Length: 453
Image 1 (cartoon, one colour):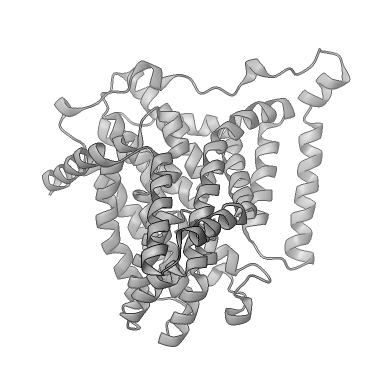
Image 2: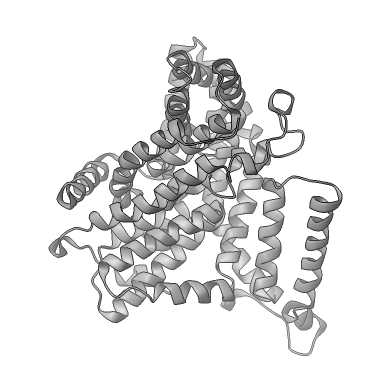
């Protein structure tokens, strides 16, 4: 069996290295695909499609800012000294190549399930740390597989506590509230069915990455410059002259403590006084407050913040292009055509799986859980109600589809690849193997695992 899995990894990698363009080029190509689809499938003119693209380009700014803040918060939290110390201790555990691959995969799963922003960034830090410590110990590694293992945890991110669609429908006055009401995360993220799928992925994924380890003669070792020390930008920050008020404010824990108290007080009132929901906005506040207090000094926080913004900029820019794609899909009705196709061939038993596949296809064009839910949510909900499928099961099907094809959508690999110094085509073949086998696990869970309603 290992020979088969290893062969699949090698074959997929060989193919993808020849055909996969850069992530930004991939985004622009998808733009043209969406334009052509709108013209030939829905009958829109070129000028109409361009107008749709322009409206969508700016229509996603709110969610783009939310996602960017979440990523920045994840980056700064990941680079906080206590967090990095823990990551360093974990990275030193492996004694063999296989242990390193399994550890990278498990860390990826854990971090992505905890929060997609932390997963997108912290995986790069711990991947590099594993590679550095392996080099010091003389452990030979197949570096592209190690980096791929550090990314494949994305397949389970929507099963975790930052699942965008689940958090959005738990938010008061969300856009589908009149149809389905407020659905707490106890019925989605913490439902028995979702937990069963998450556990199955946590077991399966490390086994697959381990089985893809090539023969030692085929190892690709990391280059020396790829293992450079992670910089926090300390050399570029002016903390002020010692003994001055500026120096005190920049380096005293007083400011982080006070602002964290403000954030904690707000969260207390939000949850216990105002009965607010645990949604994407409150999660961002928690991330930002946690990163500030863990850095302990604003000088340390600001140093890392500068690098966090640099990491987030490519994603921020690509978000706007994906917003243009989203505008085309929605205004032309193309997304409805895709979704309704899968609904039309569905039964109550098969609907969750077909909704899962449909969400996976749309995710190529809109790689944003929340943004995609805004596009597909009403179609998923109305179809589930017509077929008698519970809303929590339907939402979980959508969420898993959005996460599933992240394994082939290069958008969220950008932070990790920036750390690792690799190209998307170096790792995507291994991710494709996980895509194939995770489909089986998720599909069975969506059909037969228990969900509320």
